[in-house]
Length: 381
Image (cartoon, rainbow, N blue to C red; front, side, top):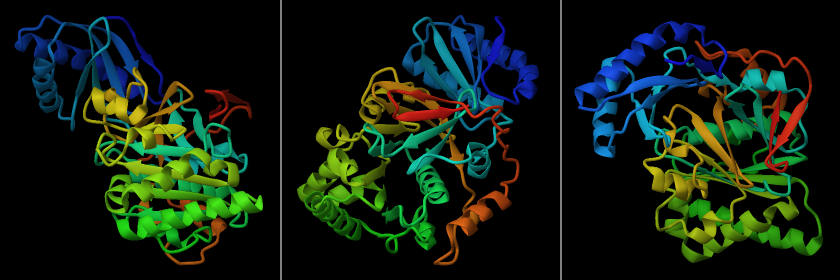
Protein backbone atom coordinates (compact mmCIF):
# COMPACT_ATOMS: atom_id res chain seq x y z
CA UNK A 1 0.00 0.00 0.00
CA UNK A 2 1.35 3.43 -0.95
CA UNK A 3 1.69 6.06 1.80
CA UNK A 4 -1.33 8.17 2.62
CA UNK A 5 -1.13 11.90 1.96
CA UNK A 6 -2.22 14.04 4.91
CA UNK A 7 -3.90 17.16 3.53
CA UNK A 8 -5.35 18.06 6.94
CA UNK A 9 -3.58 18.93 10.15
CA UNK A 10 -3.89 16.64 13.15
CA UNK A 11 -3.69 13.47 11.05
CA UNK A 12 -1.18 11.67 13.29
CA UNK A 13 -3.94 9.91 15.24
CA UNK A 14 -5.45 8.56 12.00
CA UNK A 15 -2.25 7.11 10.56
CA UNK A 16 -2.01 4.33 13.14
CA UNK A 17 -5.47 3.00 12.28
CA UNK A 18 -5.22 3.21 8.50
CA UNK A 19 -3.65 -0.21 8.01
CA UNK A 20 -6.36 -1.99 9.98
CA UNK A 21 -9.12 -0.06 8.19
CA UNK A 22 -7.56 -0.91 4.82
CA UNK A 23 -7.61 -4.64 5.70
CA UNK A 24 -11.28 -4.40 6.71
CA UNK A 25 -12.09 -2.69 3.40
CA UNK A 26 -10.32 -5.36 1.36
CA UNK A 27 -12.01 -8.14 3.36
CA UNK A 28 -15.46 -6.59 2.91
CA UNK A 29 -15.00 -6.37 -0.87
CA UNK A 30 -13.79 -9.99 -0.92
CA UNK A 31 -16.86 -11.08 1.08
CA UNK A 32 -18.98 -9.68 -1.76
CA UNK A 33 -16.95 -11.48 -4.43
CA UNK A 34 -14.89 -8.46 -5.53
CA UNK A 35 -11.09 -8.59 -5.57
CA UNK A 36 -9.77 -5.35 -4.11
CA UNK A 37 -6.51 -3.78 -2.94
CA UNK A 38 -6.11 -0.46 -1.12
CA UNK A 39 -3.38 1.40 -3.02
CA UNK A 40 -3.19 4.63 -1.04
CA UNK A 41 -5.29 7.64 -0.22
CA UNK A 42 -5.64 10.98 1.51
CA UNK A 43 -6.52 12.19 5.00
CA UNK A 44 -8.92 15.09 4.44
CA UNK A 45 -10.43 17.40 7.10
CA UNK A 46 -13.54 15.27 7.65
CA UNK A 47 -12.75 11.85 6.18
CA UNK A 48 -10.07 9.41 5.07
CA UNK A 49 -10.25 8.64 1.36
CA UNK A 50 -9.00 5.16 0.47
CA UNK A 51 -8.07 4.60 -3.16
CA UNK A 52 -9.08 1.01 -3.95
CA UNK A 53 -8.13 -0.99 -7.03
CA UNK A 54 -11.43 -2.77 -7.67
CA UNK A 55 -14.28 -3.01 -10.14
CA UNK A 56 -17.57 -3.00 -8.27
CA UNK A 57 -21.04 -2.39 -9.67
CA UNK A 58 -23.23 0.29 -8.11
CA UNK A 59 -25.60 -2.13 -6.37
CA UNK A 60 -22.71 -4.11 -4.87
CA UNK A 61 -20.95 -0.89 -3.80
CA UNK A 62 -24.04 0.16 -1.86
CA UNK A 63 -24.12 -3.14 0.04
CA UNK A 64 -20.39 -2.95 0.71
CA UNK A 65 -20.73 0.62 1.99
CA UNK A 66 -23.43 -0.41 4.46
CA UNK A 67 -21.34 -3.36 5.62
CA UNK A 68 -18.28 -1.18 6.11
CA UNK A 69 -20.24 1.41 8.09
CA UNK A 70 -21.35 -1.33 10.49
CA UNK A 71 -17.91 -2.93 10.70
CA UNK A 72 -16.10 0.36 11.29
CA UNK A 73 -18.85 1.74 13.57
CA UNK A 74 -19.22 5.01 11.67
CA UNK A 75 -22.44 6.77 10.54
CA UNK A 76 -21.85 6.09 6.85
CA UNK A 77 -19.27 5.14 4.25
CA UNK A 78 -19.33 6.49 0.70
CA UNK A 79 -18.04 4.50 -2.29
CA UNK A 80 -17.64 6.22 -5.68
CA UNK A 81 -15.81 5.47 -8.92
CA UNK A 82 -12.61 7.42 -9.55
CA UNK A 83 -11.68 6.32 -13.07
CA UNK A 84 -9.10 3.68 -12.15
CA UNK A 85 -11.05 1.96 -9.38
CA UNK A 86 -13.17 3.20 -6.50
CA UNK A 87 -12.76 5.67 -3.69
CA UNK A 88 -13.94 4.69 -0.21
CA UNK A 89 -14.54 7.67 2.10
CA UNK A 90 -14.62 6.90 5.84
CA UNK A 91 -15.38 9.66 8.39
CA UNK A 92 -12.43 10.59 10.58
CA UNK A 93 -12.87 9.66 14.21
CA UNK A 94 -10.94 12.77 15.21
CA UNK A 95 -12.81 15.20 12.96
CA UNK A 96 -14.20 18.19 14.84
CA UNK A 97 -16.02 21.36 13.78
CA UNK A 98 -13.99 24.29 12.54
CA UNK A 99 -15.06 27.25 14.64
CA UNK A 100 -16.00 30.51 12.99
CA UNK A 101 -14.49 32.29 16.01
CA UNK A 102 -11.05 30.86 15.17
CA UNK A 103 -11.32 31.87 11.55
CA UNK A 104 -12.38 35.39 12.52
CA UNK A 105 -9.29 35.72 14.68
CA UNK A 106 -7.04 34.25 12.00
CA UNK A 107 -8.38 36.26 9.08
CA UNK A 108 -8.08 39.73 10.62
CA UNK A 109 -9.50 42.60 8.60
CA UNK A 110 -11.42 41.53 5.49
CA UNK A 111 -12.50 43.46 2.39
CA UNK A 112 -15.94 45.05 2.61
CA UNK A 113 -18.89 42.63 2.36
CA UNK A 114 -16.69 39.54 2.40
CA UNK A 115 -17.99 36.39 4.10
CA UNK A 116 -16.01 33.54 5.62
CA UNK A 117 -17.18 30.16 4.33
CA UNK A 118 -14.80 27.73 6.03
CA UNK A 119 -11.44 26.10 5.33
CA UNK A 120 -10.07 24.30 2.30
CA UNK A 121 -8.37 20.90 2.38
CA UNK A 122 -5.02 22.53 3.22
CA UNK A 123 -6.78 24.49 6.02
CA UNK A 124 -6.70 27.94 4.46
CA UNK A 125 -9.75 30.17 5.05
CA UNK A 126 -12.10 30.34 2.08
CA UNK A 127 -13.68 33.75 1.60
CA UNK A 128 -16.58 34.91 -0.56
CA UNK A 129 -16.34 38.49 -1.84
CA UNK A 130 -19.95 39.45 -2.55
CA UNK A 131 -19.17 42.71 -4.40
CA UNK A 132 -16.94 40.79 -6.83
CA UNK A 133 -18.08 40.81 -10.46
CA UNK A 134 -18.93 37.11 -10.44
CA UNK A 135 -20.03 36.53 -6.85
CA UNK A 136 -23.14 38.61 -6.34
CA UNK A 137 -25.56 35.72 -5.80
CA UNK A 138 -25.16 32.30 -4.19
CA UNK A 139 -27.11 29.03 -4.29
CA UNK A 140 -26.51 26.68 -1.34
CA UNK A 141 -27.74 23.16 -2.13
CA UNK A 142 -27.63 19.81 -0.39
CA UNK A 143 -29.68 17.07 1.18
CA UNK A 144 -31.31 17.35 4.60
CA UNK A 145 -28.74 17.75 7.39
CA UNK A 146 -25.94 18.55 4.94
CA UNK A 147 -25.19 21.74 6.89
CA UNK A 148 -26.93 24.37 4.73
CA UNK A 149 -28.50 26.36 7.57
CA UNK A 150 -25.24 26.27 9.51
CA UNK A 151 -23.41 27.65 6.47
CA UNK A 152 -25.98 30.44 6.06
CA UNK A 153 -25.51 31.40 9.72
CA UNK A 154 -21.75 31.42 9.24
CA UNK A 155 -22.07 33.71 6.23
CA UNK A 156 -24.37 36.11 8.11
CA UNK A 157 -22.27 36.26 11.28
CA UNK A 158 -18.99 36.70 9.42
CA UNK A 159 -20.52 39.55 7.42
CA UNK A 160 -21.78 41.16 10.63
CA UNK A 161 -18.34 40.86 12.20
CA UNK A 162 -16.62 43.03 9.63
CA UNK A 163 -19.31 45.41 8.36
CA UNK A 164 -21.25 48.12 10.16
CA UNK A 165 -25.06 48.17 9.77
CA UNK A 166 -24.69 51.39 7.79
CA UNK A 167 -22.63 49.42 5.26
CA UNK A 168 -24.47 46.10 5.20
CA UNK A 169 -27.94 44.94 6.21
CA UNK A 170 -29.47 41.47 6.39
CA UNK A 171 -32.87 40.36 5.12
CA UNK A 172 -33.82 36.95 6.57
CA UNK A 173 -36.26 34.39 5.17
CA UNK A 174 -36.42 31.27 7.34
CA UNK A 175 -39.16 28.97 6.01
CA UNK A 176 -38.15 26.31 8.53
CA UNK A 177 -37.81 28.55 11.62
CA UNK A 178 -34.83 28.02 13.85
CA UNK A 179 -31.78 28.26 11.60
CA UNK A 180 -31.83 31.97 10.79
CA UNK A 181 -34.44 33.28 13.21
CA UNK A 182 -31.97 34.16 16.02
CA UNK A 183 -30.03 36.36 13.59
CA UNK A 184 -32.89 38.88 13.68
CA UNK A 185 -31.31 40.15 16.93
CA UNK A 186 -28.30 41.42 14.99
CA UNK A 187 -28.28 45.20 14.48
CA UNK A 188 -27.80 44.47 10.78
CA UNK A 189 -31.23 42.78 10.44
CA UNK A 190 -33.81 44.88 8.58
CA UNK A 191 -36.73 43.12 10.27
CA UNK A 192 -37.78 39.91 11.98
CA UNK A 193 -37.13 36.81 9.93
CA UNK A 194 -39.97 35.79 7.60
CA UNK A 195 -41.16 32.51 9.08
CA UNK A 196 -43.20 31.03 6.22
CA UNK A 197 -43.22 30.87 2.43
CA UNK A 198 -45.93 33.52 2.02
CA UNK A 199 -44.03 36.09 4.07
CA UNK A 200 -40.85 35.08 2.26
CA UNK A 201 -42.47 35.74 -1.10
CA UNK A 202 -43.53 39.20 0.09
CA UNK A 203 -39.96 40.04 1.11
CA UNK A 204 -38.62 38.83 -2.24
CA UNK A 205 -41.14 41.06 -4.03
CA UNK A 206 -40.13 44.00 -1.84
CA UNK A 207 -36.45 43.40 -2.58
CA UNK A 208 -37.10 43.39 -6.30
CA UNK A 209 -38.91 46.73 -5.96
CA UNK A 210 -35.94 48.03 -3.98
CA UNK A 211 -33.68 46.95 -6.83
CA UNK A 212 -35.79 48.92 -9.30
CA UNK A 213 -35.75 51.99 -7.04
CA UNK A 214 -31.99 51.87 -6.65
CA UNK A 215 -31.57 51.39 -10.37
CA UNK A 216 -33.65 54.46 -11.12
CA UNK A 217 -32.09 56.64 -8.41
CA UNK A 218 -28.52 55.47 -8.93
CA UNK A 219 -27.48 54.31 -5.45
CA UNK A 220 -26.25 51.01 -4.03
CA UNK A 221 -25.70 51.45 -0.30
CA UNK A 222 -26.19 50.08 2.20
CA UNK A 223 -25.69 46.68 0.66
CA UNK A 224 -28.39 44.15 1.55
CA UNK A 225 -27.72 40.42 1.77
CA UNK A 226 -30.92 38.38 1.58
CA UNK A 227 -30.50 34.95 3.17
CA UNK A 228 -33.29 32.58 2.14
CA UNK A 229 -33.54 29.10 3.68
CA UNK A 230 -36.17 27.02 1.88
CA UNK A 231 -36.03 28.23 -1.72
CA UNK A 232 -38.26 25.46 -3.07
CA UNK A 233 -41.04 26.32 -0.58
CA UNK A 234 -41.06 30.02 -1.45
CA UNK A 235 -41.23 29.18 -5.16
CA UNK A 236 -44.02 26.62 -4.67
CA UNK A 237 -46.19 29.26 -2.99
CA UNK A 238 -45.10 32.38 -4.86
CA UNK A 239 -45.18 30.98 -8.37
CA UNK A 240 -43.94 32.69 -11.53
CA UNK A 241 -43.88 36.23 -10.14
CA UNK A 242 -41.57 35.27 -7.27
CA UNK A 243 -39.38 33.21 -9.59
CA UNK A 244 -39.02 36.16 -11.94
CA UNK A 245 -38.09 38.42 -9.01
CA UNK A 246 -35.47 35.92 -7.80
CA UNK A 247 -33.95 35.58 -11.27
CA UNK A 248 -33.63 39.35 -11.63
CA UNK A 249 -32.12 39.69 -8.17
CA UNK A 250 -29.63 36.88 -8.80
CA UNK A 251 -28.56 38.32 -12.15
CA UNK A 252 -28.61 42.06 -11.51
CA UNK A 253 -28.88 42.66 -7.78
CA UNK A 254 -25.13 43.05 -7.26
CA UNK A 255 -25.10 46.11 -9.55
CA UNK A 256 -27.17 48.03 -6.99
CA UNK A 257 -25.80 46.45 -3.82
CA UNK A 258 -28.30 43.59 -3.37
CA UNK A 259 -27.14 40.01 -2.87
CA UNK A 260 -29.28 36.86 -2.88
CA UNK A 261 -28.01 33.84 -0.91
CA UNK A 262 -30.60 31.06 -1.17
CA UNK A 263 -30.54 27.50 0.18
CA UNK A 264 -32.46 24.44 -0.99
CA UNK A 265 -32.53 20.78 -0.03
CA UNK A 266 -34.10 19.88 -3.39
CA UNK A 267 -31.93 21.37 -6.17
CA UNK A 268 -33.56 19.14 -8.80
CA UNK A 269 -37.19 19.80 -7.83
CA UNK A 270 -39.51 21.12 -10.59
CA UNK A 271 -40.17 24.36 -8.69
CA UNK A 272 -36.54 25.43 -9.23
CA UNK A 273 -36.23 26.01 -12.95
CA UNK A 274 -33.03 25.76 -14.99
CA UNK A 275 -33.39 29.49 -15.62
CA UNK A 276 -33.22 30.24 -11.90
CA UNK A 277 -30.43 27.78 -11.14
CA UNK A 278 -28.30 29.22 -13.91
CA UNK A 279 -28.81 32.75 -12.58
CA UNK A 280 -26.67 32.13 -9.49
CA UNK A 281 -23.03 33.12 -9.84
CA UNK A 282 -21.73 30.80 -7.11
CA UNK A 283 -22.93 27.36 -6.01
CA UNK A 284 -22.08 25.93 -2.58
CA UNK A 285 -22.96 22.24 -2.77
CA UNK A 286 -23.20 19.89 0.20
CA UNK A 287 -23.98 16.17 0.34
CA UNK A 288 -26.49 15.15 -2.35
CA UNK A 289 -28.26 11.91 -3.18
CA UNK A 290 -26.62 11.02 -6.48
CA UNK A 291 -24.54 12.24 -9.42
CA UNK A 292 -27.59 13.67 -11.19
CA UNK A 293 -28.46 15.84 -8.22
CA UNK A 294 -24.81 16.89 -7.92
CA UNK A 295 -24.95 18.13 -11.51
CA UNK A 296 -28.20 20.01 -10.90
CA UNK A 297 -26.82 21.58 -7.74
CA UNK A 298 -23.36 22.48 -8.99
CA UNK A 299 -24.03 23.09 -12.66
CA UNK A 300 -20.79 21.38 -13.71
CA UNK A 301 -19.57 17.80 -14.07
CA UNK A 302 -16.72 16.48 -11.98
CA UNK A 303 -17.27 18.85 -9.04
CA UNK A 304 -16.84 16.05 -6.51
CA UNK A 305 -20.13 16.88 -4.79
CA UNK A 306 -21.29 13.29 -5.21
CA UNK A 307 -18.51 12.14 -2.86
CA UNK A 308 -19.41 14.38 0.09
CA UNK A 309 -20.39 12.77 3.39
CA UNK A 310 -22.80 15.35 4.80
CA UNK A 311 -20.57 16.32 7.72
CA UNK A 312 -20.46 20.01 6.88
CA UNK A 313 -18.26 19.35 3.85
CA UNK A 314 -19.08 21.36 0.73
CA UNK A 315 -17.80 22.16 -2.74
CA UNK A 316 -17.73 25.79 -3.91
CA UNK A 317 -18.37 26.04 -7.65
CA UNK A 318 -17.59 29.38 -9.27
CA UNK A 319 -16.39 30.53 -12.67
CA UNK A 320 -16.08 26.90 -13.80
CA UNK A 321 -13.82 25.84 -10.92
CA UNK A 322 -14.62 23.66 -7.90
CA UNK A 323 -13.05 24.10 -4.44
CA UNK A 324 -13.82 21.57 -1.66
CA UNK A 325 -14.09 23.07 1.83
CA UNK A 326 -15.26 22.39 5.36
CA UNK A 327 -17.93 24.89 6.45
CA UNK A 328 -17.14 26.94 9.54
CA UNK A 329 -19.39 26.43 12.52
CA UNK A 330 -20.92 28.86 15.03
CA UNK A 331 -22.44 27.00 18.03
CA UNK A 332 -26.10 27.88 18.44
CA UNK A 333 -25.55 29.07 22.01
CA UNK A 334 -23.34 31.86 20.62
CA UNK A 335 -26.07 33.25 18.36
CA UNK A 336 -27.62 36.58 19.40
CA UNK A 337 -30.22 36.32 22.12
CA UNK A 338 -31.15 39.96 22.72
CA UNK A 339 -32.44 42.33 20.02
CA UNK A 340 -30.14 45.29 19.47
CA UNK A 341 -26.95 43.53 20.53
CA UNK A 342 -23.98 45.22 18.92
CA UNK A 343 -21.82 43.46 16.39
CA UNK A 344 -18.93 43.65 18.87
CA UNK A 345 -21.01 41.85 21.49
CA UNK A 346 -22.04 39.14 19.04
CA UNK A 347 -18.49 38.51 17.90
CA UNK A 348 -17.20 38.58 21.48
CA UNK A 349 -19.75 35.86 22.23
CA UNK A 350 -18.53 33.82 19.28
CA UNK A 351 -14.94 34.07 20.42
CA UNK A 352 -15.69 33.46 24.06
CA UNK A 353 -17.59 30.18 23.79
CA UNK A 354 -15.69 27.34 22.18
CA UNK A 355 -17.66 24.25 21.16
CA UNK A 356 -16.48 21.26 23.12
CA UNK A 357 -13.97 19.24 21.10
CA UNK A 358 -13.79 21.77 18.25
CA UNK A 359 -10.38 22.58 16.89
CA UNK A 360 -8.95 26.05 16.50
CA UNK A 361 -7.22 26.97 13.27
CA UNK A 362 -3.62 28.04 13.95
CA UNK A 363 -2.68 31.64 13.09
CA UNK A 364 -1.55 32.28 9.56
CA UNK A 365 2.25 32.55 9.34
CA UNK A 366 2.06 35.48 6.93
CA UNK A 367 -0.57 37.80 5.56
CA UNK A 368 -0.54 36.62 1.97
CA UNK A 369 -3.66 35.76 -0.03
CA UNK A 370 -4.15 33.97 -3.33
CA UNK A 371 -7.21 34.63 -5.44
CA UNK A 372 -8.95 31.67 -7.05
CA UNK A 373 -11.44 31.32 -9.87
CA UNK A 374 -11.07 34.83 -11.27
CA UNK A 375 -11.37 36.68 -7.95
CA UNK A 376 -14.69 35.10 -7.00
CA UNK A 377 -13.42 32.96 -4.14
CA UNK A 378 -10.44 33.96 -2.04
CA UNK A 379 -8.21 31.66 -0.04
CA UNK A 380 -6.00 33.40 2.50
CA UNK A 381 -3.04 31.47 3.81
